[in-house]
Image (tube, rainbow over all chains, first blue to last red; front, top):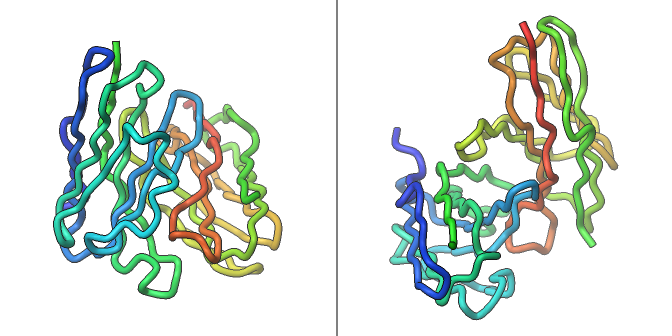
Length: 118
Length: 111
């Protein structure tokens, strides 16, 4: 079946511009996660959605970052006024139940969006 | 603070030379420990979930084990196609369900 998809696969932008990254989760997965992977660093958690609700947004690096999700479907991560330190691979993952399931259910990752800020 | 440390950072093996990758963790209550494989330019690919100390899981040439402080990924008779970065992650009780990742071990298997 179809896995998690992300678009665009690559994005090059100029410092100060806004960018929007998209994630399509596996159909039927209620939980969705965004992570950031900087070169040479481990994956860094950004935000979690249970359905279309994000209970805690404290993982977002700054108020330039925002995210939303439509129902239990597509999610977009928006970065306003991009900075060079925002350059990274942004990964999206989905899981069947998230915290609602009561167990550590498997997160399946998309291929990522490589963001380069010049 | 919850954290995950993987060692070694890089490992070079000859084809057929078995070895182990280490993942040490400190977490305020473990809900699950995950192993992923990541190829260059791709997202992490799920391998295993371990839930409690003493648990073991196997898949082809890979075997994952778990203690109260660390996990090992044993690779038996590796092949060049096993070359990848292997990531370890934990999910803590009381978290949002997010995974805390180590920096990974980059494995190269030469023919």
